[in-house]
Image 1 (cartoon, one colour):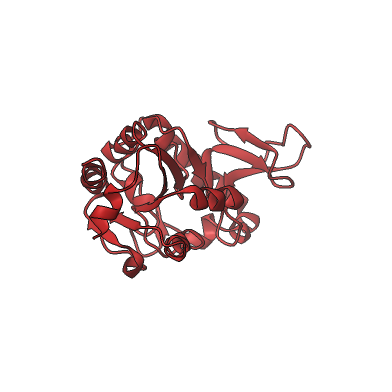
Image 2: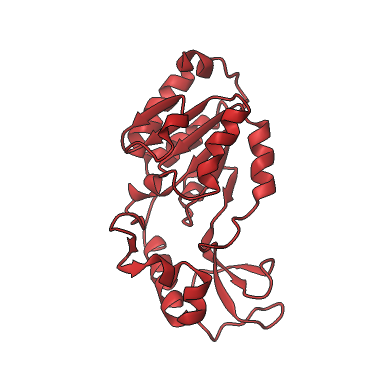
Length: 239
């Protein structure tokens, strides 16, 4: 039984936790799959692709400026975020998030990789290592402090390579368990992580409001709002 395999994971074992929009949604952050591919009434290709940025940079700047203001105007972590912090008392929890918000940081998680970038950062269009904390509005007038080039949101758009993939694969090899929280299983490469863990013969768990696209690859699924599902899973793991 999967529950027995989970219970055999000793304290201080590493657990690989993939989080998606479903965990942030309970904090009031809209997901781009809420309205037929619209994100705050914008088409994804207009605000989340390099082509959209080069076609209409003002639209893209304004879009992320508004998202940044929303995030930094009192948006708080929810119980799902805090339950993951609680698990750190027993296990090594490594969070690989598809989310661009900072709610895991606000909750107190200690190991977080933002594979799709961060809303509160900006980077140079010529060198992605020219990366800066950014909490104000961003526009065409801002220039890279290092080289003087144009700045852009530090977001991984569709068609671009997610960040820190080598570190992510290293963490997967070190981990005893894969847990997917609030993600649709439609966006790669994150959607392929469960296959990677199955190939390594490691247990896989899905915590999601509804079955994901790749639900058949999970050993255990709890289909409830993220905060409730994470709580139930935590009790199972610590039982």
